[in-house]
Amino acid sequence: MTGNDTVTKYMLRVARDVTVAPKSDKPRMDKKVKDRDDSAGRTTGWQDGADYDIGDDVPFRLKGTVTSHYDVYDTYAFTFHDTMATGLTFQPTTVKAYVGNRNSVTNTVEYTEIAAANYVVNSAPGDGHTFDVVFSNLKEIPAVKGGSEITVEYEAKLNENAVIGAQGNPNTAYLEFSNNPYGEETGETPKDTAIVFTYQLTVNKKMGDGTTELPGAAFKLEKKLPNGADGAEKWEEVGRTPAAGEATTFEFKGLDDGTYKLTEITTPSGYNTITPIEFTIHADHGTSGNPATLNEIYITVPAGSEVTPDEFTVGQDAGKLTGVVSTNVVNQAGTQLPTTGGMGTTLFYVIGAILVFGAVVLLVTKKRMSGRA
Image (cartoon, rainbow, N blue to C red; front, top):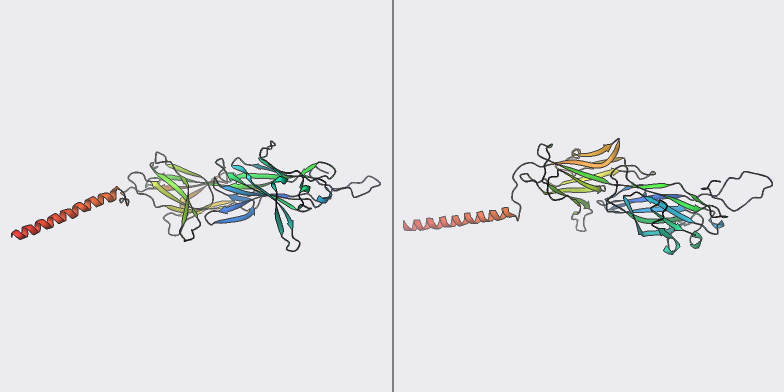
């Protein structure tokens, strides 16, 4: 028997030496994540890959099955060990645990929340893991029986250390469980990994020739959200560049897939402001695998847009997607019409008043001269 096998209580009597293989089934474990499309207002089921914005809270799930020979144990330990990439920050207050049993009538698994007093969340286990969720003895939980599913759901924040592109931000876990009713030995399941991807938009500011760098601009980036109850479009600002300076390249790091709008909030002097650019980032990162892989990133734009998908470049390095989407934003030289409500409007009012006053003076003068004649 290996350390990861499980055994039952003795069930045979032998008169000579024989070889006996362990027959008890082993617990299983899987690690999953949900994906969320902010622009569509849609969340997926549990899967192996997802993408998020930096700053988002990412939902994860650990699920382990109890051995069918659970009833022969006097005590039964069950511990989830979870290790996160540095781009993920564990949120211990979000942890919830459930026991699930199959309903023989509906053939569905029904879940009941497990009281927090029945387990310990160790956020500093000192064993190289990010955290452990420890059930020291499942026998103390009446709802648990052979074949029960024990699930732990929690959130982790995608932080500023998140890796952009195909490498992603993995979250790996395994289950440690009692495997000998006669002792305190434990076994382990294979490790399972869920992964979170994130992307970047790089904007290169150019003059009208499309190649010469142009300083003096500033931008904001907004993500489209589902329309409001009145049908009006809703946009959420997700990034803003520093005030206009000498920079000609601007980076918006840590983006999810979804629909975005890039607006020029400061225009270089002597140039016309661009029309806001609307585009959608699509990503195929798969939904299964250990872990899932980032297979494709592509861009679409609305019908009638002044830009085309070909104006965006998706970066690759050694055949792997870097997660960086680049585009050149070109300003044409010219003179803009005065902005409504600005100094230009005031100037028009002053000039208009002068012209009206001059016309009145001219009319009065003509009438006087006509009367004298």
